[in-house]
Length: 292
Image (cartoon, rainbow, N blue to C red; front, side, top):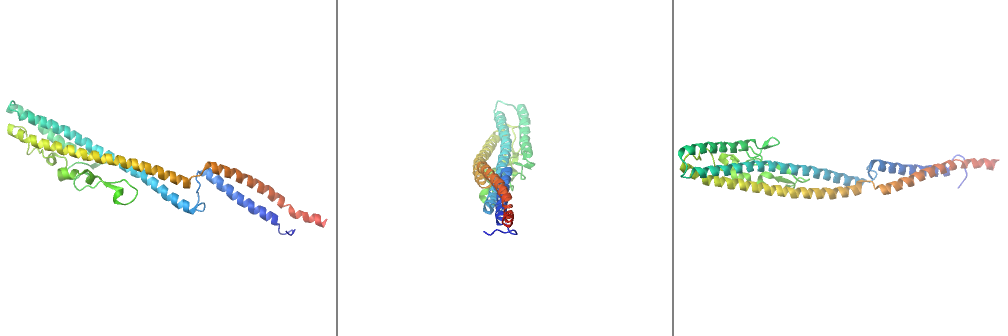
């Protein structure tokens, strides 16, 4: 290699190596300080694209889990109301049976009818106040789980039929009581038709109450089945999210054992390159020795 004054090839080589080593040291510092292997698209363009999509999927799975939990809470609210209605119907049957007995006189039947009518009204009240997040659940015609309500719960991360659950259709409450919901009328124990103020009326009411009890029990069973289904959905979402997070971590996250080793190596290389550059800058001065 020629010995010149204007072009110091030794210094240029040292500068180039120093710049490269500084760039690698900067990358190591950035990865160690951020915890990420990929901080810029230039680090790994394909990895960034895959990791970003995986991160979106993980966040969507987390939200889907929240949605499923909300669905469970909504169904539990409805089931709690139906449970109370079931208790009321059982008490109404007890009163109807008492009134249907020949050992009870008409005066006593009037007293029995007073409680019976109050319980009928309580069925309507429960149906009207049972709500979740401000939406009626089992009321006449307006409920999320009754009539035209769809109550779609997004339990997946895509826009397909398998990623959403139509709770209304899955539980099947509308098929049991129709648009009237879980009211006196919907359950077939309407106060305008059934009373226990007379022996004959009380006997007629028994069959209607038995049917209503069966309807409520069937509805509670349907709700329980969907709650169990959502439980498995939550379990699957948790497993999928865990696996996706692990895969994303392999792509996006910094391996500290590797990065600390790289940092130490790059730091030494920068120091060495700096020292060599200082020496390379002194090479042109050897020309003076030739001239001396």
